[in-house]
Length: 293
Ligand SMILES: Nc1ncnc2c1ncn2[C@@H]1O[C@H](COP(=O)(O)OP(=O)(O)OP(=O)(O)O)[C@@H](O)[C@H]1O
Image (cartoon, rainbow, N blue to C red; front, top):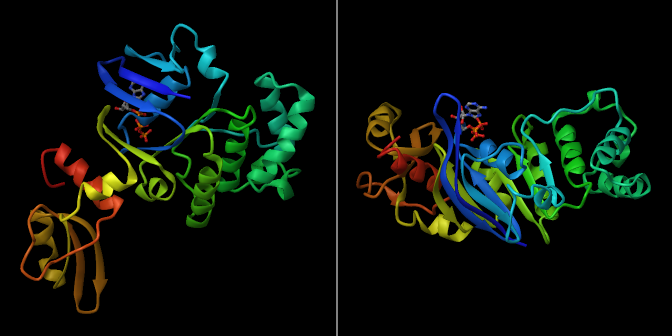
């Protein structure tokens, strides 16, 4: 099972580049595709889902070029798009039966698969309720269930945690980890904690280009010795922000505790801190923009 993306670029009308010379090889596991808004994540996902054609480059699934034979990838694909919508009047079972029919899954096979999936996404108790009354998190879980109907080898989920409350977000992440197994999962997000919890690999993308392709360990070690904590009076915070990349601040009664990401020690009182993926991500984005901020 191998997905190979080679030198893929996408140019939209008006000379806007959605992707620029993007390459990546993937095997089983969860890839966190991490990047800010407009980075090119959805463009890449739509190309992989064969909804959009790349302007340049090629993609192969187990060695077969998908532009010549899109069915090679479509037959193994499960896709949860960013703007996934449900039919509000259908209940979960009706909706999944409808989606199964669209995917050409035999109705008998679909019935048992749907029961199984409703358990997996923990919606069995709500299966007869119209989807219009579902919470955002429940809708996303139905979205995952429809993407899993054909037991896909390649599961693509585009910004699935946007708009979810913290509890639903954790539930959704756990669901994705449980689903990884023997398939390739690509999870696009701009939220670092989404990939922190689930990803076996992290590709950071910005302005259509790949900035780094990390393992969780290498992402953390990329920033070893560059993360500092220091306590300062609140009145000094703005000056520190002008000079350094600040990854977080915590207000205290006696001032502010600040986390700084910097090659140099930001002041004599600063102590080195354990890096997080958030620190590494912010540093990478900052250096790609030519420095702080
Ligand atoms: N259909 C389109 N026509 C023109 N430009 C587009 C189109 N789709 C995307 N773009 C542009 O391509 C770039 C990448 O967009 P894309 O939606 O892939 O990013 P993203 O990382 O998914 O961001 P977001 O999280 O905001 O959706 C952006 O500059 C965007 O404005």
